[in-house]
Length: 185
Image 1 (tube, rainbow, N blue to C red):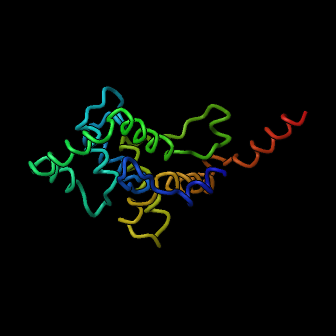
Image 2 (cartoon, helix red, strand yellow; image 1 turned 135 degrees about the vertical axis):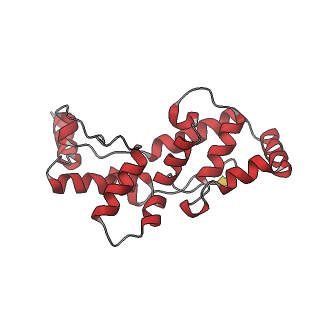
């Protein structure tokens, strides 16, 4: 299945019995704000994993309420201690990292093949930049819904906007055709 198909057919993950939402720009921005090692890299503690799981179960409308509730509630913290008594942190952490990484699939473009760049020149965090560009171009989608859109779908919309503006050319089908030809030769 190609990037565009995966983007629209993204299915949320179930990790250790917890249902997560498809990874969205809201999730990425919230994890950036929490300085999460799931986005920034580095050592991942049990607390980092709990915060990331709570964020990935949330919508933009929830904000960080689930994370705040966990931090402020002794009963909630005890519940998570019990959860990790029954589930291996290393396994849950690896599955969560895989959920995040596999959610960020970008269409290949001729600009990338040619060595060009395609990043924000504004200095805005990349999730905010993606949401802003798509919100400006697609007026029919509510702003909060864009934040909750699976990030791979959001990236596909941004790629189409870039192609329409003439800043890049999506090469998914072209490159797959070339790869099949090379394989047959």
